[in-house]
Image 1 (cartoon, helix red, strand yellow):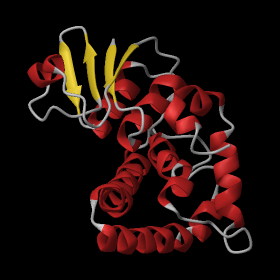
Image 2 (image 1 turned 180 degrees about the horizontal axis):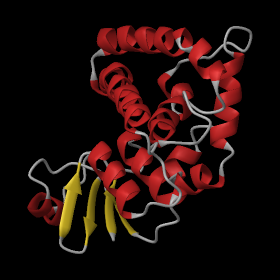
Image 3 (image 1 turned 180 degrees about the vertical axis):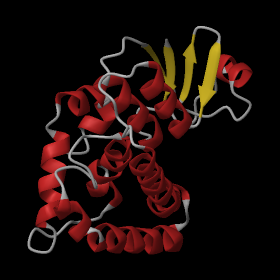
Amino acid sequence: MTLFSSPDSADSHRVRIVLAEKDITYDTLNLGPNDKSEDLAELNPYNTTPTLIDRDLVLYDARIIMEYLDERFPHPPLMPVDPVTRAHSRLALYRIERDWFSLVQDIEHGDQQEAAQARKILRESVLSAVEVFAIKPYFLSDEFSLVDCTIAPILWRLPKYGIDVPEKQAKPILRYMDRVFSRDAFQQSLSKIEKSIRP
């Protein structure tokens, strides 16, 4: 199994978290933002990371890869078994991708005004979820899930994005971050660049 990964991409990071949680052995081909790979271009028409190769199967798009890994390697499960709860998890994934990951694109690639606006919206959005983070040990769940794998890379990068999380206002979020960031699999998933984001 081979993963084409960007060492500083939230999308690649969430796939690496799933691989670590499942204790899957794989090879990593790291590509920087300006690196071009003919191999990747032949495998993925969008030439994007993450891209996973598993024997003859080639998958791209972080969520598709994550769900495939969860089904192919069922232990530990990272999605609920119950169809209703699973649907709620998929909705949460959809909202995080749409509401948070789209803002990351503007923060990292937009002009100064777009980045500042996206930074402000992302900060407000994270802080508005304080009560949700307080309900259960993980995001809307007692068990670590694909939703947490998707949220964690964004929260890890908040200092890089210039977003502070005030302790007084956001204790449940900070507790959640401590809980997730201290997981062995999360620590294993970090690239050297990602490790340097937080001391």
